Length: 121
Image 1 (cartoon, helix red, strand yellow):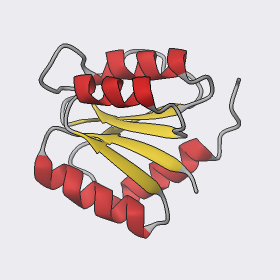
Image 2 (tube, one colour):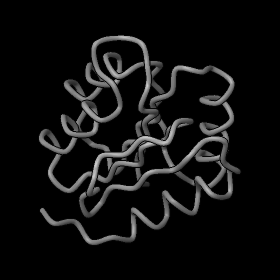
Image 3 (cartoon, one colour):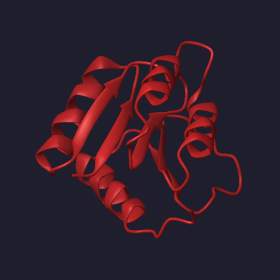
Image 4 (cartoon, helix red, strand yellow):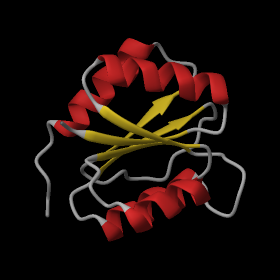
């Protein structure tokens, strides 16, 4: 079963995304901040994808978390989610950006698309 680390500081958004991803057959672990997610990744690196908000409380934003995850876990995919028009160009292979608000079906499509990209590692 593919594993996803879902990182979102807004509880209701995180809960809806968690339920949708679980119903789609993914094993999902939740974190409420980039700092909490980094702690999870230190202890457990068996993830296929990180789905992270970009702007979160704490010392790590989503961009930093994504870079850290990709250095710790070669080949991991990262889906960045943001309610703001922000991007760093260009996104690497295995990365995507999804704008909020989004339909849950769009999130699932982005996850499935990323997971279908062959890993560079």
